[in-house]
Image 1 (cartoon, rainbow, N blue to C red):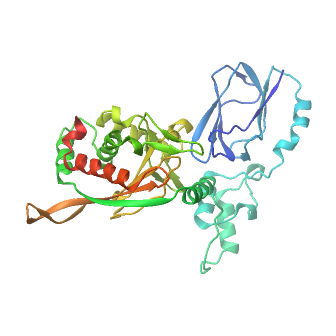
Image 2: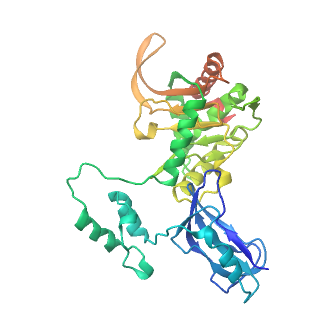
Image 3: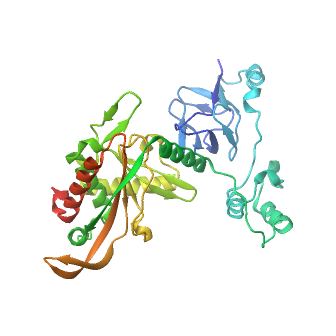
Length: 371
């Protein structure tokens, strides 16, 4: 018998999904494990697999269309099966306004802050194309207007909700240290002299060091629940990645048990996948600690909002050349400022301070990171 396939919830924060591509056509036979479609969530583009052999009888959401979770995505069944009763029965699920728009038009509208509800498409089947956006700009937008209105993206809505909840629920406090980075710089340069290997970044070294410091201070690796504190056995580090329309946190699992080379590879791979919206939901889940590095953007120091359910987040500033005191002499060296923001319900000041002490030792004596 035919079965209705609804828009799946592919992440815990997904509200609306967009069909990026259909890999099957109506009437085409499908085998178990075949890719039916690619669906864009608030976090990534994910593939939807068929769970059994069947035939694609109906497509409810076409390529480029967006629809809420649980809307009718497709109907699968036997070849030439009558699905009229199913269509009638599920009509209410697809009672939403669809917007057809080309990628170029979508980007132009976003950049100009144009609400798509105001645009009438002149492309095939009423699809909004680039010329429609340009015509709307010429006719309606004043270059001297004081502001443009841009609808919230799904990811921006989720970020807003999560950060507000984190600030309200977690009593934040922050601890600050400054670390001399000269030995770490020498170590990185030595590693990267081997031209046949991929380059190691300072962030790779800091992520590894942050995990080893957690191993020495296990209370940091914890989460608050209503009934208890969870102390995690695995050290899974979330890496904050800035996207065009928001922030995403891919997770590197069991960092303390992996080599520096493996950590570096996974970070690069997941950052690329995140920016291309090809990362899977399970690669964004399960973090026990988060590292946010804005040093590459020239930021000296900053504080971050805790990525729940983590109890801490480490903020990393830029490496600065400055006079420092070494053996009672002023010399020129390199330092970086680190900020550890903690949930005071779980992490007392002494615990956070001990963690930063361990981190500082690892970074200033970085051969310990390689052992």
